[in-house]
Length: 235
Figure 1 (cartoon, rainbow, N blue to C red):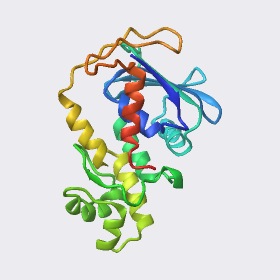
Figure 2 (figure 1 turned 90 degrees about the vertical axis):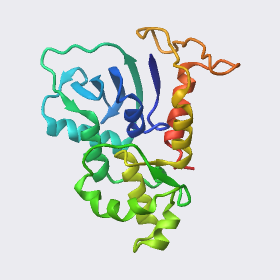
Figure 3 (figure 1 turned 135 degrees about the vertical axis):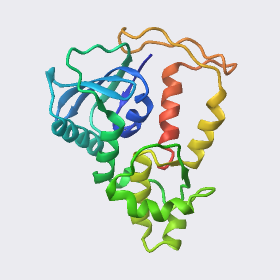
Figure 4 (figure 1 turned 30 degrees about the vertical axis):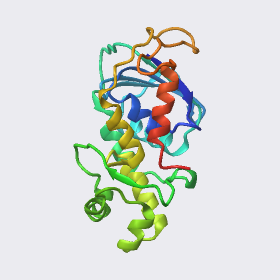
């Protein structure tokens, strides 16, 4: 499976969510201060990171790189699914680093969810970042059938803007999901698996037709649809 796109349209946070259970190589072209980042992943385990071909071994530096990617969303991405073998693997959990980064990152206004977009609890296991624990303890009991920033600002001592930021951060670390996206995810849980051609050809690869619909769609279009659903909080 190969996917590709522009980080201006699909944020690095959402791309990371889609590929985090895959094994392969993620290329982020001119995404880090004009340089290309290459990440080797194996089922959420970050095995190696390169910047313009040079290895990055320090976890602190890797966190700084991910922080930049989350807050800037520049360049293009391309992911090729394949088995990853590294002589000296980093063995860092990408999802753990992303949770820390997402909790601390300053988010641009156009990335925040709409004030009326409703969110529900997502399936999540792991520690809640310390910076989000206080707000999460207040928001979690209110999620129920779904709440928006408008709802929360009426029930909690925070403004709509503060709740939009908090909801974005909670979504980024995997604690909540847009209600519509969660419904579609659950509905599609039993859908037939789709297969694609092996990765390794130039951009523009096509996928095998999906059997789910009478009108076939390419894997790339399906993935872009998934990204848009993940980004369902923005309008």
